[in-house]
Length: 343
Ligand code: NAD
Ligand code: LMR
Image 1: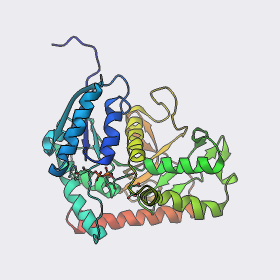
Image 2: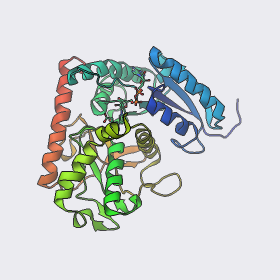
Image 3: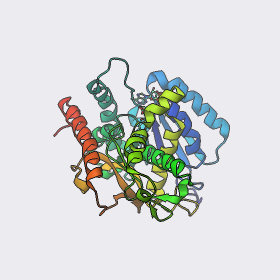
Image 4: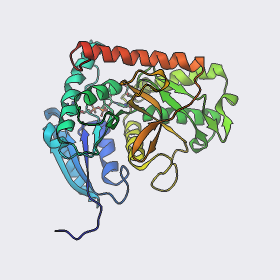
């Protein structure tokens, strides 16, 4: 038996590991940026056969980095192997919408991915498993995965809206010509889609309400649509969808879920916010129907995301939150009609 007092390795499973976001994520995970500089990592890279060679090549590069924290790397196309003992699951692999595909086609195609992955997590993952879905449509994919994992508490399934949150902070900081670290209280509500609502009505810059610093026309006509459509803007300008910023947000989301918001590993709150945003299974807070995976203002407390309660929601915000939630209800009803989840 080992007499080592070193921390126990944590098993991290990444799906879509041969893809672009996978490539931007893996080296950060293996170098300790996800779980901290003292936590050894067992990496499981899940791919489909067409992506397995790219994942295998990346595994060779990981070896060539000689990361001290990286205990093992496995590339697999087998779900049971991929999720056996998983503590942290990053579900990135997903099929993007192709030419001529309707929303229902995409929901169906991805339901066939996230249902079996949820079932494999239910079957084999560790008791403390935490799941973040990045692959689109992220919120509804998380709903499908959770529905296939009846033995896993539903609060362990989340979807990424941290990229939207970071985009809102970045755009606000640029407009106000302030460092991001001076901003707090920004929220993304609803779906990771163009209907999302980036809310600054509780936000501050160095204690001054943001609403005293920007006018409503700018909020309504520039800020809100630009954050909500930033994914499309990146595709148009860059010629491909966001990759490094998506990987960065995935790291932020999981690092703070495990380590806490406002208690970064360096003892500081890296992005200076007193809460962040994540899509979590609704408990009915703020009138969002229970069970939907919707973005909320959240804090990570003792390893759990908690929805920040008690924020006043003005009519301006209410209609926008409701519109995004209506889209989530439509998506849920569509995957129900496809037989991907039960009532
Ligand atoms: P990519 O096409 O480069 O990579 C996706 C990889 O997933 C491919 O290698 C593919 O083989 C793999 N894959 C497909 N089905 C799989 C399955 N069933 N199991 C395991 N692997 C599978 O795409 P990308 O740029 O890495 O983006 C991945 C996803 O993330 C897309 O759906 C994209 O729309 C989404 N995305 C989400 C956000 C967000 O903020 N939530 C941001 C950016 C991108
Ligand atoms: C993003 O927000 O960048 C991604 O979800 C990609 C997209 O299609 O917008």
